[in-house]
Image 1 (cartoon, rainbow, N blue to C red):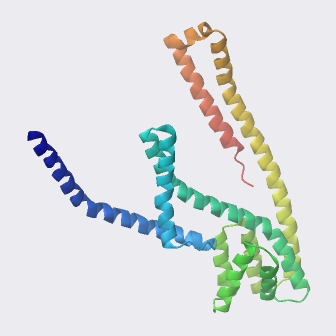
Image 2: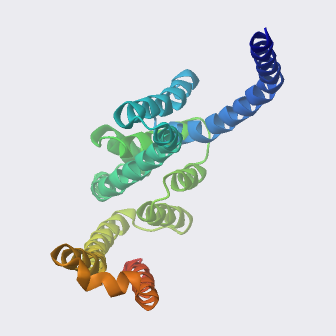
Length: 282
């Protein structure tokens, strides 16, 4: 009888707590979901991805849930599954960010060919807007989608200058910044856009070539830094496997542990310094 009363008391207490906390939990979740939709939907729209609210909600719920279940089935560790589910929530936002980076990189790679097409269209006697239409017809996505959006906004009565400024802010591409600036200045002061576009193509190609060389050198420096960082670890592990007594003083003696800690801190600081020095902006 006493056990029954205890179970009944615990059950009723649990139901009361759930009933009290459910409205607050539902409110917190709805606010979080609304903010996420407001944040992610414009980013998906800017990439011309038609993802509805329901699909985004399913992704947000199922992706962490499936990730947690799979990790739990593999590891049988509850905390690992919980951490994986949380990582799944974060990873969905990371995937959207990665998609934006890939799309902008693809756009930047198409821009040189697009400028050559614009220059050729202007040489053939077409206007700037007609050249944009030719680019939309001839080029693949994403550059065709972006210029098509510029044309649609202009047809709806938005001035071309404003359309181009919005285009520049949306893509956040340095080469596009150059293009928009050149077009805006040329429309105000006059100028031969054909020659300007041709010179821009040469400038962008030379810049990309220099950027490629700098990235190669930076990657080489980072690789050398990682090798130098892990070499003492591999060497120490080899010595320990060969004869553990060689490292007894280093591990057991207080001064040895102090020297080992100093070595680890020096390795980490050296790696951070190499990474910082290898970051060169062009």
